[in-house]
Image (cartoon, rainbow, N blue to C red; front, side, top):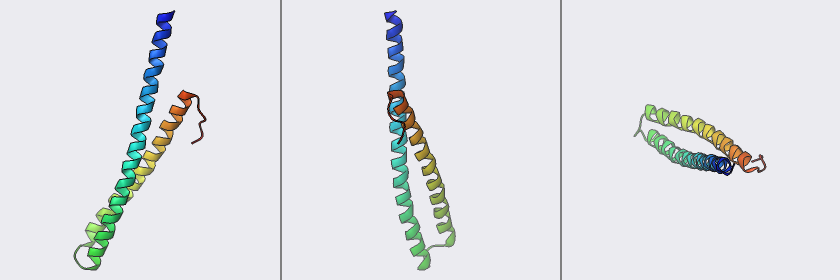
Length: 99
């Protein structure tokens, strides 16, 4: 009986550790995505300024804007995933599921 209890405790501990790591990874991914958006905003503004000064072509701006749009969409997906991971962790810990 104690071997089974010990096994169950270790299994739960492992699942909790996995949930903690998944949550931390998801939160870090969101943070990095937000930094990417800030960086891309600056690049787009710089490229637009160069275009107005006839130092860049429209294709460069469109490529940057396209990348910016993809990153914004990805960031929303990453935020959703972070919410899911937090909910799962809170469920495991018996906490309130509202974020």
